[in-house]
Image 1 (tube, one colour):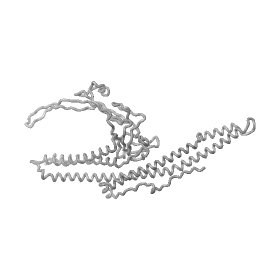
Image 2 (cartoon, one colour):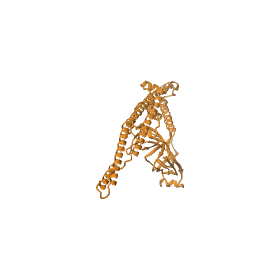
Image 3 (tube, one colour):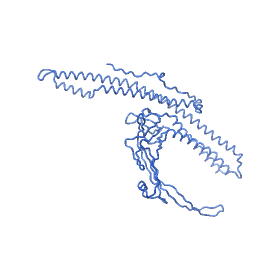
Image 4 (tube, one colour):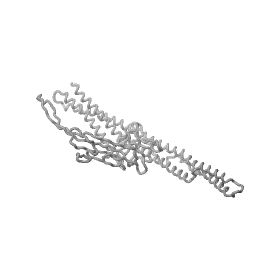
Length: 441
């Protein structure tokens, strides 16, 4: 048997394995999109998050072709060419002949783009997005073909021409315009300049996507890719054996005898497909369980923050209030002493009082207890809101996890792995004492 025919089987097997890997990757992304609950911008914690909102920037970019304000754009100019090729070939009778054919295509003659850090804004606030390293799915904002008579031809394209040019150019541009609705899946981290989170590329992030498509469109796209690529792998695997038999057979191929063999090889591929799915489902459930644990850790961190921060703020306000009361009393005594002594009469030195007053002002430049109380009130409200957001995120991700454990067929994988549902946080069973706020007189 010719060894070259086995190369077809090997090539088909390698392509089938590559397709199976690509299908598994698409399915993993589809599951990740489905399992992540959408966060509000003021409820983002460190870790993998999903956000929806509008693109905003204080100083937006201007796209090259459409000249629209945006935060990301990429443009391309292609020129069309056509040529006639003459080739020599040998026909079935062994005679040398020539023939001509026409080839055509497009060549990129210019391209470029730019992007900047921007903000995703929703109803609750805004969060900074660093797009470097992200998989970006922008909108098409410009698509136009023209001839040299159009000012665009040379105005936005190069002066030279490609070989065999038909003098037709295509100008296309994609961008994320200002106020465009975007969907983001990425890793949240703490900013370097202020105490606030941001979304940026991370080597451990399973996905970093900035898309102008909706969550449903993204998930459907990955799901369709999964089924198409997996089915393509099955076709390539079986086709490799079919073509091998067709080339290796000395006479007609006994297809009736070979069909069970092909069915067996197809069943082997389906078995590998099933194992890949079980592996995918298990890893997906493990990842979801880890996010549930992380969500609970976020709740605990916020409770710890409240327990440590609020008493310190209360003591600071009490101390500032006492300082203000003492200073105001001292100032009143100084004013009384300065006004009770007539000029030339013995008594307290007014200039000495002024020196004391200046020292007090230098030591306490702003003594406004009302602002301190307002700051404490705002911090109390913000702290309780952060705790509420952390609890809400935990309940959302735990609900996703529990639903997956009870769904078919994921529930069978979870049962084999011994995974159990996570109880949700309720108002009655969440017993953690709040920090007492008492300002004694």
